[in-house]
Length: 93
Image (tube, rainbow, N blue to C red; front, side, top):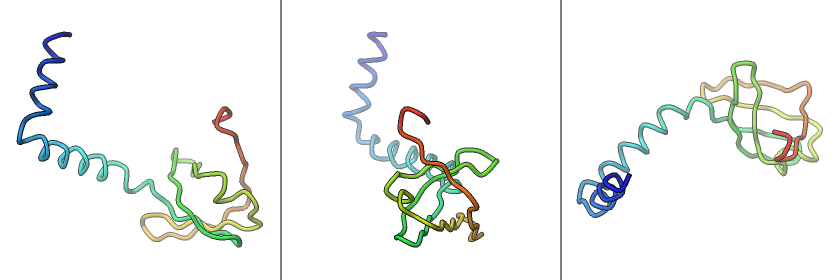
């Protein structure tokens, strides 16, 4: 474990660290971008992300809290109108 810590410190001082960060950021983006959604309500707009294949979406409470209607646009441009939604507190997710 000590050797890994020393290696990590050496990497942090390496000129190549910027390239490593860029590669990691790109990989994370490519892996997750398709799950990002735009959420529009009659009160405003926000973003969220798909959690599973069933269409479950997570977003911040203020995006949908007082909404009467919710429309979701996927990363592919598909527009979905929700029929129902549930508000959950952090502990319930």
